[in-house]
Image 1 (spheres, rainbow, N blue to C red):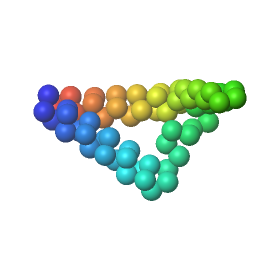
Image 2: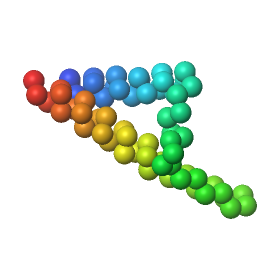
Image 3: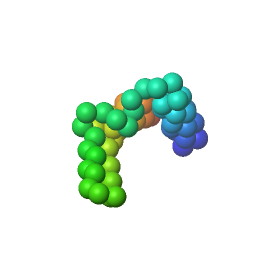
Image 4: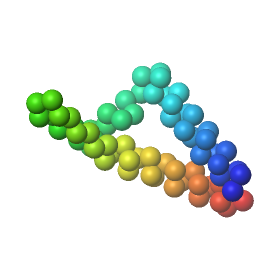
Length: 65
């Protein structure tokens, strides 16, 4: 459990580093933004799918040990 938490923390830190360097994480082509007047709704579908795939691969590699 401890090793998994460390890996998840490192993945989150890496994503944060990529975002500060200007990577378009959170603005992928499958993310939906609806603007109506003073209301904005943002649904990050592609970002969620990408994050799910990456975390699944990372955690499956960690779980093999």
